Length: 450
Image (tube, rainbow, N blue to C red; front, side):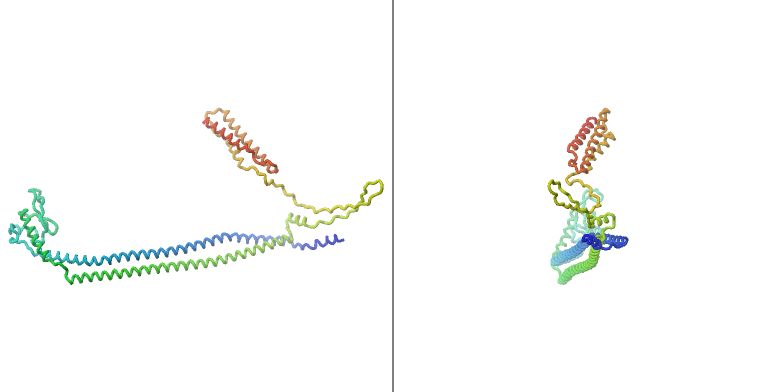
């Protein structure tokens, strides 16, 4: 009676199965939603890598901006130092320039005084011994009227190239002239006359500049010094402006990069939140799908078999108890009742296919490489033997086919042993030796008839 009650209560504990079409539609919806969420979450790794690259590029941009700022500061300081050194050198040379200016002014003043004195010294018969009025007129006709009109004399070839050397008078303008009648003696008189006037003019020439000239030179030096000092101050101002501009560019660049980083960080936070929500929804959908399978099982044939095999086995039918008497010659033994065990549940699942043993290793496909090589060699007649008898070529072809058949037969046999879980599943070691031995024989024969 208790067995019947348990049989009746067992089916009532299982939940009522809903409509199969609705259940399939719900599970299809869950699977599609799960695929969509997983497809969305697959992009999270690429998003994180892209965000990491973005942060790295931002740091590189900040470093680049800082390096540009430092380079601008260095360039401004270098330009300032170069200009200051140039101005300092000009200031140091200013005192020497004043002295040089005074010396130059004095030299110009003396040259002007001497030139005026020589221009006042006119040629005259009284002062030039040996030169008559005719020669003086000839000299005046050629532009020599005073001691300032010529600078000296020299000996040279005649103008027409005949008559030997003559005396040439060098003009103040730079060219030279020859006056007929003026030889070496008269030329010497001219030079000595000019030198006497030159010595007297140099003795009477001023030995120092005037106070007005000195004041004029000092005023020019002061003005130049003030210009250089103003230039030195402007150099510092230009350097400060360059530093300020570099700082402004750096601040603007860093502010722009910071704003871009903040915007990108906000977008990244929002995207991560979306990924987190998608992950939570994926977990919820997977739980719903798993709960559906746990509650109602699968709707396929194998799922029904699994659920049917999981059902409790029905009780065994009641059998009549049979008495088994042991043979005895004196008195009968008491009857012993034997109860048969109830049959267990019958499993309709297919038996699992036998898998190869873990220790067995199958021969690889690389063993087919020499098989294909020797078959192609046999079909193409490789190697080509020049001057060899036909029997040798036939022997090589037969050898190629024999080696290919030998290796392929062993390979097939070992593959079958591996599938049947037999012990010997690897290729024999001598197979590799056979391949190389035959290759050496072929090479020797080809070199002999080459």
